[in-house]
Amino acid sequence: MKPLPRVNLDDKIFTLKYYVDEDYAHLRIRDEAVCQRCPTRPCLSFCPAGVYRLDRSGGITVSYQACVECGSCRVACPYANIEWSYPRGGFGVAYKFG
Ligand code: SF4
Ligand code: SF4
Image (cartoon, rainbow, N blue to C red; front, side, top):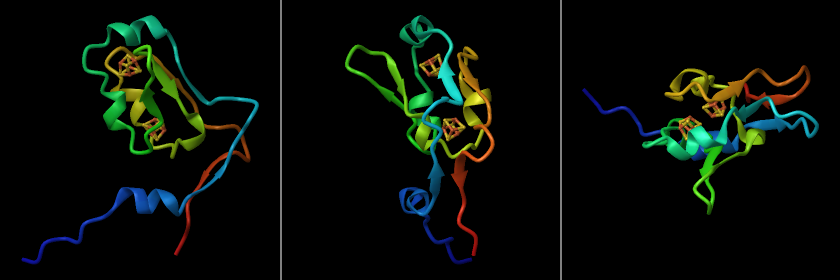
């Protein structure tokens, strides 16, 4: 059986279009102190869009503008410390069709 072709995630994400809501962040960290105590910080790896990044003080920054709305962070944060909802109507990611 032939191996499946490799997919470059960054190339795929580059094709997306975003309608950014500058007035409302549809996801946020509930309690930053919980992140400071989180030993493995899986959000740094499970988010396909790299929304969560470590800042210099050891905290987590959230670039909600890049979210592709996969919903993983609703279930994958071991402390349920991420509040997530869909963006407001007319905002968010638009997938390319075809
Ligand atoms: Fe914070 Fe959850 Fe990320 Fe841990 S996985 S650092 S608790 S947002
Ligand atoms: Fe990242 Fe998906 Fe959560 Fe958006 S919904 S922040 S893309 S893990």
